[in-house]
Length: 437
Image 1: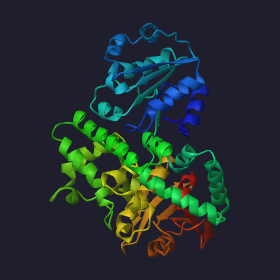
Image 2: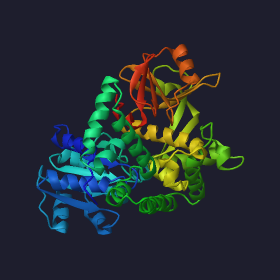
Image 3: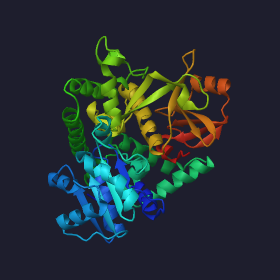
Image 4: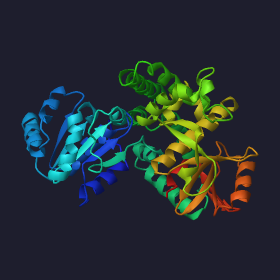
């Protein structure tokens, strides 16, 4: 795989330098690049690193029959034939959910041997913790969630020259001045590529090296199969078919005009209690996320979410296209037959980009059927964000919200260029990564 620059690398540098550093748990769905990034970090930022994979190296578990950190490290050093030096060796516990004792030991590393630098990773850590298999080191570790590449990372992974485009986009976002037409059109075309390819690192690597959409789809299907395998291996027998059914239905319901998730569309007569455990499993492993409706636009927003009303989005737009067998031509070229699904796919994209920037997101509806795609806080302000898949920006819903709630300003994401008019900030689809807290 080509070296792909990830924003999380800067976070890891800050973690290493922090005087308040604790053992780090890097969590996230399978295939988002956790193992790759921590090994790259160990290689470039430490004298050496020790990599322990608890799924592949079952014998490692026997080294944790004690919770004394220095004894554990002596044993690991002997097993790996490497010297472990405080502050100079990165210790990596990969797939830590496969060894409960290793997870528990992080508490004692924090309390007794915090001079050692440890990163633990886990794709299914939340599932195992919810099953009460662990004495979890609450307050003794730091958490960070890793996600697929966002659009900015996707651009920078392709060619160094795209850093010029990224800087132009960021400048126009700050000034609200339109991007030159050449840049704007190129950026929209690259955005459409991203909708099909997505941000899973191995998929992006295949695309960057070959430009072959068929090879991209093969890699996407392999990742989806790994997700379905996990559903079978790490789920109760009664929940396996329901979990697969719900996951497949997430992208299907995006094509509907009303994108609120409906249990009855998963299975005729289906109800919340039939699928709540399956939905919890899917969200816990990080392969999809829920967007809840706000009953009232008041602070704190979390206190006013409607627990029974939510939309469901997949963790990666490329996988969303793959599971629906969308062709490259459907996404890259205008196609009126694709418009309904395109709207849902675009919302999915915006949701993921904003989550990557650590926003807490909700949506809003009025009694008169007006709907705002996203409500969030930017600074101290509650800001409505409307999403349009094309450059048609007419919107009754946003006008209703503005006249009713009188926000400081609103954001409209669409195919149109940058601008600011009538208290609405126009943000092109390719620039969502610029929206920050």
